[in-house]
Amino acid sequence: MAAGKRQIHIQNPPARPGALRLAPERLEVALAGRGLGSRFTISEGVGADQLPDGARDAEILFLLTKTPLDEARRVAPKLKWVQTAYAGMEKTVPSLPKGLLVSNASGVHAEKGAEYILTAALMLNSAIPQFIENKATAAWEPIYTPALRTRRVTMLGVGAIGGAAAVLLKRLGCVVWGVTRSGEATVDLDGVVDISGIDELLPKTGILVSTLPDTPDTDELIDRSRIQALPHGAGIISVGRAPAFPPQWPRGAP
Image (tube, rainbow, N blue to C red; front, side):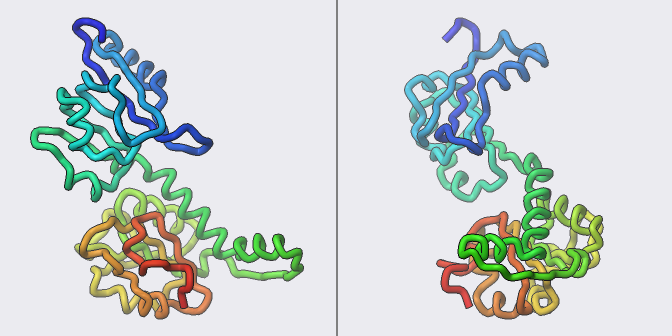
């Protein structure tokens, strides 16, 4: 490593189309734009959770893999700060070494996450999955569906992504209710309840959206009985953690 420079290491996932990665050259441009280019050297690892030996002098780590933090500190004993690419920290915190600063990407994915939810809602409402299935079987079956605004949406979690999605859905005329731990939300909704109010909302829900994290409180929060409480034809969109739903769901779901 160049004398007097601090090392930043980027641990990227395997290179493939659509993979979330941080290009070293983009970080170099960002640092240079802030007059910090001469203070850092950048290394990169690709395709593995294990940090390479080239990261051993790193003090800062941009982590886009599932590398355990205690293992990262073992390879890079000088490590002081880890920036993850994800909002969820459930699998990271248990292996957090003492004295290591970790920051997540909460809020960074709000715009894109909201666009994904809106896209999924439009696809479900327009029966696009059924059209795709019919195409595969060469079946001609006209399907007529109402406008999205006729669907009542229930948002499980109204954080950065859920809140941004709610704004987009309301712009299209949807009635949007939120479910949060506190029973409050920072965006304008048609109503908000705490977790105890879920069962009252489900029978009126046309599209259920989950942005829930993986915590003991959310484990199988939407169990099979609650899925069955949804009206016939309701859609479910999950951009949160899978354990909020039953194991093996939706395969074999009622």
